[in-house]
Length: 155
Image (tube, rainbow, N blue to C red):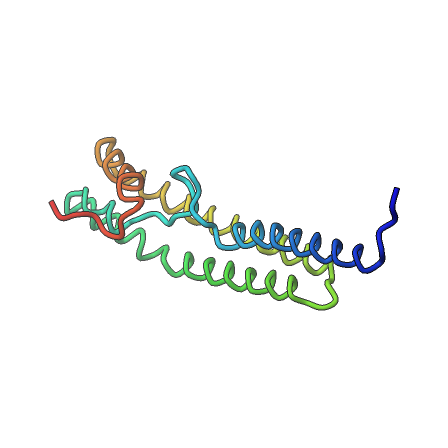
């Protein structure tokens, strides 16, 4: 068996490292930015603006009030997620890489995402409590009908 020269081994190592970094980078970017997947729950926000159009004026007013009171908390949670994502990116770019700090940044990001999800679930639960069965069906069906459009068509 022929031995490889140090130069050939060095080139192979660099190529292997480049491929690995590309794959890991693609996975990390996918997690950080939530690129849409192949299913309905792909990280897309709930389109309140589309859903409320299916309600009568009284129900629309109640839902609007719930969103109005919840919006500051949701915004704060989203800001916290963005800050945690920046920290993860900063740790990933750090030289030398501090694995404990990176793990802590990922843990913080996970906690902040969970807090935002819990807040959103609370809001949607409150909304569900104010609507009758038909209104709930129409309101929450909008989530799936207008997934790929910015705004629904006027009827």
